[in-house]
Image (tube, rainbow, N blue to C red; front, side, top):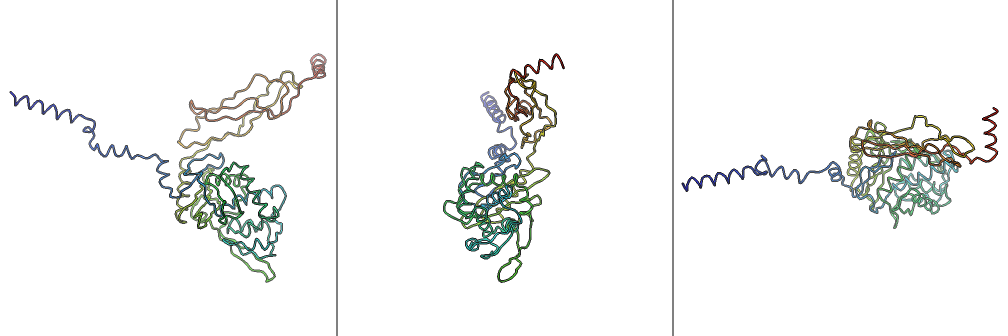
Length: 404
C-alpha cells in the first residue's frame, strides 16, 4: 500500500511540472531569449548607424523621422557651405547680385587652404561659376570670394550667416568662417544642419541643378593666360545612389566625414545628415541606410483645398459677408503604414462674424482626423478687409432695399 501511495505522489509531481508554462513551450529558453532581445525597427536602425550623430528629415514638412544624438555639438567641415549657398541665393533673389556678375578674387580669398579651385589674386569669375565651384568642388577660395562680393568682407558675411542661423532656429550653431575650415567655436549639430539643408533645398530648389553635376570645367583667365580646370563632385552619392539629389559633403581631421544627403523617390524628398563618420564608406552606408528606411516607411497626405468655401455673414459691416480662404495647404507625414484614404476633413466655421474684419484674421479651421485621432488642422482666414458700417452705409442699404 505504501508503495502504491508513493507512486501516486511521484506521478502527481511529474504531472504538475509538465503543465508549467515553461514545460508547455517546446524551447522555453529560446522563446524567452527572443522576447528579451527583440528590437523594434527603429532600434535596429539606430544600431546600424555607425556615425555618432545623424538625422533623417522629411523635406516638405520638416518632420524628423530618425535621430541619433542630433544636438551634439560637432565641427561641420564643408557642410558649412550650405549656409554660404543660402546667402548667395538669397542675394540673387533680392537682386543684390546676378548670376552673370563678374567677381574679382582678393588676395585673402586666393590664400585659402583645404579644398580649392586655385583662384588667383585679381582673377575674375562669374557668380554662377563660383556657385559651381562651391557646389561641385567644395572650393574654399570660391566661398570667400563670394562672401567678400556680397558683404564686403568674410567677417561681415559670417555675421550674416549667424543671423540667418538664428532666424532658422539653429540654436546650437556658431559660424566662424564661411567655408568650414576647423576653427575654435565653429560648431553646429546634425539637427541644425538638417534645418539649413531644408531651407536651401525648399526655398532655392535650383541648387540641385548645380550639386548634381558630376563633372564640369571652369576656365582660369589670368595674366598668364587661359587655363581649363576640372571640377569633380565631392559627393559620391550622386553616382552611388540612384535617388540622390545632393547636397554637400565635408571632411576635416576634427570633423571627420560628414554629409547632408538629399534624395527623392516617387515625390518623397528626404534629408539625411551624417556627422563624424570614421570613413567615407561608413558615411555613405549610413546615409543610404537612412534614406532607404525613410522611403520604405514614409507616406505623405497632401490637401491643396480644391473645394469652394462659403462666404460668412458679417454683422454691422460695410459689406454683408466676407470671403474666406485656407491659410495654407495641409500635409501629414505617416510612418506606420496607415491608410491615408481614411483621413477625414471637417470644417469648423461660425454662423457669422462681427465687423471690423481684417484680411488674415482667423475665422475658423479645417480639422483632420485619422480614425479617432486628430492629426492636424489648418486655419481658415478672412480673404479681405471688412470695415465696420457707418451711418452712410446704413442709408445706402435702406435705399437699395426699397428703391433699387
